[in-house]
Length: 526
Ligand code: SAH
Image 1 (cartoon, rainbow, N blue to C red):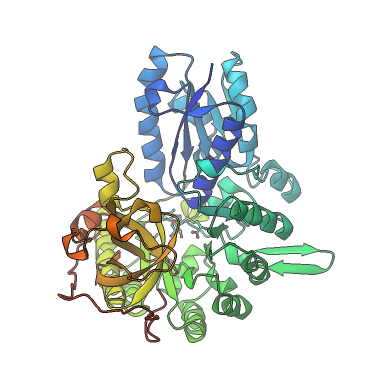
Image 2 (cartoon, rainbow, N blue to C red):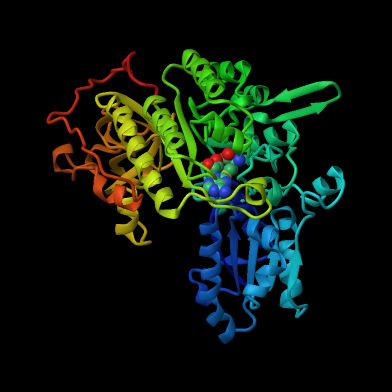
């Protein structure tokens, strides 16, 4: 009888990719996806350890699944990924009904381990060595790169895919657990990366996002020849049928001129760069062991903006790191107000066992202060993001259509939408800005031009441009523009993202773009 799998994934893009691969491997063994946990033969949680909150969520999910396991002892409960590597035996101490605990470096073993559990072999724990558990080579070997064949059906959309450039991390920032749970940095062979990208494109993938903990530190040496990220981008840019290439996450010090030039010059490479600053103060950056000063970060940002003036740069920030004073926090606030980040991901410091900060620096900023600083920084960034997005009103942007907008996703409630009737769709510009617009669902997976009519802090809204060459919907399938509901429901989106809501500028009349109108030279790059 067919077995059914339910999998929940939290955390970063690496986890999304790992889940895709685990599911693909099980599907090849005849498993199918369950629609609910109640009909599942196995329930997996692919976990994150980067903050305490991510772990708490998983332990409460394990609490909820306990009753299922009591009623159906044959149900296989699995904890995969970073929390499995970090907590190891502790997972089963806290939740003895868990059958499988598998770290991110052992995921290739999941299909075999599930079979063993189903055959009555009892619970299994498979993790890699920890960072002091042996020679570098031995530790690296215990974190096996997990790169089996891909299965397009397992991705959120078949036309977008993550491709791993490296596993692990060697930066050892004082706050960060990643080097401990994902092991030493190990690059994948460029030939393997390019072959995987070609295969994805042959299966219909149009956008590839390269992922590594510090993706721009990529380095592969082979017989005296070294391949860096810039070289890899050149190879990928040459793949016919691929439209867009993105890469995350960048380490500020490795943002070299050759990489910036490659981003500027290669037509398929997105001018979107996620380069986390983490903090605005030299003293805090030093305590964080980030390895650069704020002056060096700004110098990097200056080089980047000089080469690519409209580049969309995003950052991560941690508030309330050990010993952070009001004056130190103010430097982060000033940075956010002046650096024109497209967006910032803001986190309250969460002490992680095993890290240098956990061992040596007290977590002494009160939770209420962290919360206030988090809120103040969010508001500062939202104002900057809104100002940045308002510059797009009246421009035409090329958008890769991803699917229903968050609003219509909820409305649809899992029902199939008619491919010809207009729905509110969502896509992204080349620079990763979210755009919502009304159009038939069959445009999903296509590149369309959208005339931007409105902007909020977190997204743009507009109308599919007239006279579209390949993607224009059949005229009779589209009601007249005036009859269509106004697209942006920013209040809902903002509420969903729990960010503050800002004003929307909505021009009364549509910006007129006749047929043959090209993108204005002055338009931001998308
Ligand atoms: N190397 C990857 C993943 C790091 S985790 C990257 O740079 O994106 C993603 C973000 O989480 C980090 O950039 C940092 O801002 C935040 N983070 C990491 N450890 C944290 C901690 N202990 N507490 C709060 N935020 C943390």
